[in-house]
Length: 208
Image (cartoon, rainbow, N blue to C red; front, top):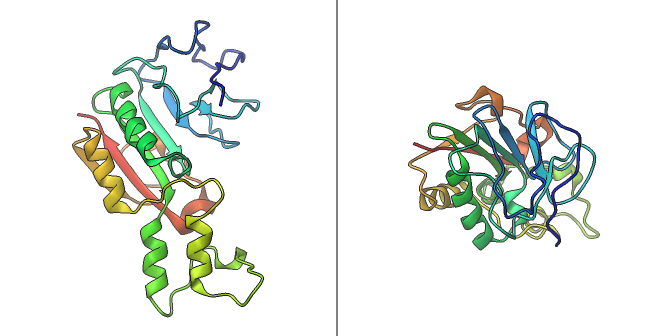
């Protein structure tokens, strides 16, 4: 996948006109929205690997290191993105999050909760997340929902709380917390999508 900087009007964080290997400036007020897709809350510098209006930077997370200076970013939000990259890439990206965050700042990571799906599967009377959208060509069983989330065409790796915590600790974060929808350390990062709540894992890591 090609790596390119997007040529957009000034949104408060000017894309660097140099090649993507050149680190871009940032200040404490800059919040990154990594893997934003079509969801672009106000006040964020939007990063995605597919161009669309509103994207500030087109970037492939499976590729080079993030083009931001160390200790330069005021916060990071990413929702339902990390499951779409390989596990080795996420190990590297988690380290990049820690590198670019300013001390005392937080990354908020939201992914499908693989542990939730497994727990609902083994609980005989529990309903699987988004069961209403499962429409198999044969009579439904709960394992159909397991296959749907784990083998989604673009899902590369699923996470539960323990695996996400270990990855972030491996990246050097000393404060890693299990959070809830709409609750966290930095109110600016609480832009969670309501429609993602039923199946999501909410984790925050803060750089010391």
